[in-house]
Image: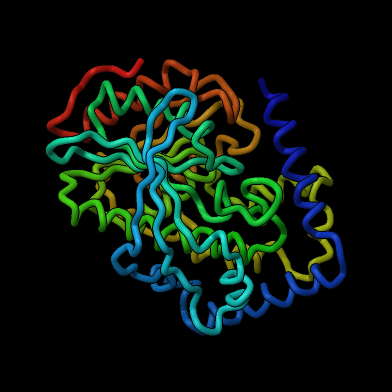
Length: 351
């Protein structure tokens, strides 16, 4: 099982090398990162990262289209993203030039009749397509057996928002500005979606994310307090540390030539670090699950989040980064979390 994660790590390393090919690209990355660190420091956001995150307006131009994936009927929701990086922020014009990324996408399964509780699912790195996202989260079972409305949020630069040949291209490359803007835009849009659901009468809204989506869930829990639950699955909670581990294996040795220290990169990315924000979601609504054999989100990552979150309920399973959908202990853990946090809906097990 460990070999699967090693292969995944190798793929991440190769992908990062492919996206760091020229001297000009290297210089642009370095210049932007130095400018960003200086800008964030001047604004006081490294010490107070909450101030970096903008409050979203109401969602605009929301549309729905019926679709099917592997026999699962869902609605493809789109909306116009209003996210714009701060004036003066490095990489702003480049980010706004990613045209496909300016439209938000969600896969939605909702019941007719009176409003139901909602669960927002956030996929992992390289995901963001319904044929992957829906089965990984057991969406149809949750929708039918639990009676929940489900919304799958597609992260920036993923799925139909991609900017390269593959979903997620441009996120986990040595260009850390893209990672920062990915998470900043995700926070902006997710908070807008939550407000939109509440304004439409949603009695409860919870969030469940996996891998990069687990990281995103943990970050969101530091900005949104009134969530039914925040479930962080296999969270790689320190992405800079994960990159350093890859670098130690010579997979990302090109990072040594950027001219920026790992310490400065860590400081720069404080604005999107879940560990830098005090959680706003109540302690009894925080949940974590993780794999003992995970080679990507190694145990120290979920343990760091567990400590930061005040030692909430955590479920360990004897598997790697990708086996959790088939782990009975994980599915039972999620079932119990939903039963504990949601009211006025079916308690039927999804197993």
